[in-house]
Each structure stands twice: as C-alpha cells, then as structure tokens.
Length: 254
Image (tube, rainbow, N blue to C red; front, side, top):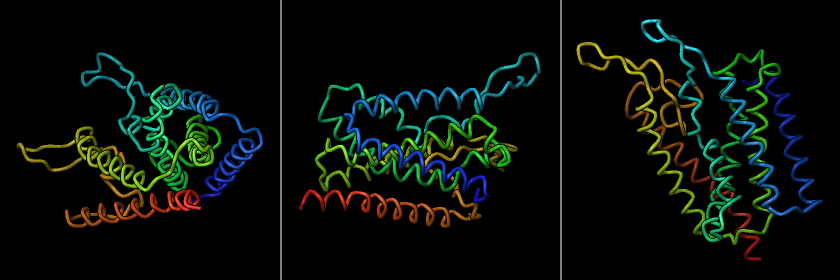
C-alpha cells in the first residue's frame, strides 16, 4: 500500500475510468449494454479470484487434500455484492425495483471502489506488493474496482433514475442492515480458540464491511473503542452517501 506500484496501478485505474466515461458520453450506449459489459467483467473477476486464491489444504489427519478458498475472499464485501446487483438490474423486467437498485448502486459503487483502490487489501491478505504486476489477482482487483467506479458515474449520467431524497435514506438503511449482518458473518467465519471452555483468542477473521477491524491497523483493545470506531464509520458513510446524491438532487431541482 502507498508504494510506487500502488500509485502506478492508481494511474492505470484512472485511465480506465476516464476512458470508459468519455466513450460512454461519445457513443451513448444504453445502460443495458453497459451492464452487459459489466457482467462480463464480473465473470472474469470472480473466475480469476477463485483460481488465484484457492489453496490445496490437507485434512487434519493428512489423509486427503482439499481445495479451499480463504473466507475473506467470499463475495460478501460491499463491492462484491455489486456483482449480484449488476446481474439483477441487467436482466430484471421489474422497472420499479431496477430503479431502486440502480439508485443504491450509484453511491455504493463509487464509495466502496474508491476506498478499495485507496487501501488495496490484496497487498495485505493475498500477495506481496512486489507481485503487483505479475499476479493475476492484482489485475482482477484493480480492473474490477475501476469498472465499479465507471459504472457508478455512468448510472448517474444515464438518466434512468429519477433522483429523490428518499434514495439517501433507503441507501443508508440498506448499508446499515448489511453492516449489522456482517458482524454476525465475521464472527461466524472467524477461528476462535477456547481453553477449558473459555474464549481466549481469535486467530483469523474476515472483515466484511470493515465492521470487525479498522483497515488502518489502529489497535482497538476495549469494547468502547470498537463502538466509537463503528460510530465514526457510520457518520462517514452518512456524509459520503449524502455528498454523492446532492449534485444529482440539485440538478433535478434546476
């Protein structure tokens, strides 16, 4: 993170995003056609991720070797769940639900992907930064998140959503519910260690929606510190989502 390789990738991502948006403005394809391309990128992304992260791990008695994907790579992050939403809005015939989902995708694609590119988790959980240009998962990570940012901008430009204040509230409610559920999921997929029936440590955990641990590595030792952290990221989510919608709501007023 924050090495010259990271900054080179950020430059590549910016070029992909700008090129995508400029081509959209020039050609003006339908949003449906854009979503078709995004579906292809999603398939490429997940296939590459699975075959890049899968490990052959022996059973406890060593009698069998099994393929295993570390739980932090499950598609349960804010950016990963966009895959299901992209396929849904591409193929659904329910216009009302499609508009609601597109309204949710606009800020969450932008915010989630920008944060992911700013703090690429693959360099701490998957590969060393030295392999930034040789490991396939590196290309998967940066191309996929660039696509999400471009898609978020194109949704805003497409004119297929009638932007209203209610979209702010519905988006924040969905994020809050998903974040709350992620606390259960993170605990469920963690690896606790018990001694004499007493929980003494947690050796591995995913961090979906960043509700389990802060991405900056700031040490949290007390429950009140964790609750304060949740309050901070909640406030940040409210501010960022609102800022995303404000220009579109103002444009509708004008």
